[in-house]
Length: 164
Image (cartoon, rainbow, N blue to C red; front, side, top):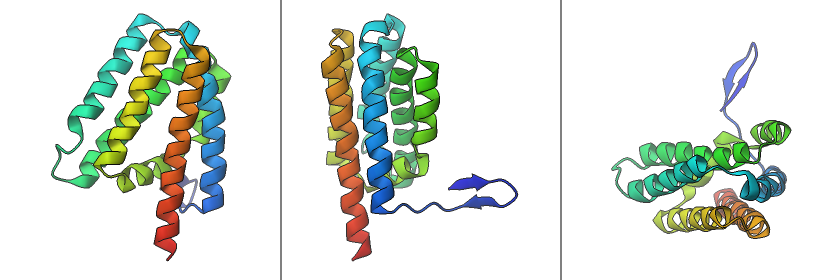
């Protein structure tokens, strides 16, 4: 849903080209954020990321309502990624990421994820966290980019299946 001044809320739809463009930008921006964060992240931020990853693992399959679980996972995922961007210590980058990430699209992606895809997503979170903890900037960037591309591929596959 997108809020448009003087028009209210409108449902967003994304074409495959939109998804490709948005996720390509996310991969570059969030990959760069992870690279920078590897040398700047605080121990408190690392602990917070650990807590978020743990919460995401614990709630997979716990909710009886798929939509409720999806909303919680999207919130935790957004917080995880946002913490890394903040840890990059680059305010302009923060604003760029905020204007690039489309939450309705992230929600759709998580809604399409099954338990297996949700576990894979969190596996990436754990690997990114490990790279950040050890200060491996290049590895953190590569993992973040691949994590974003993995999400892109799933969304594009789901959009193609919906179009059939």
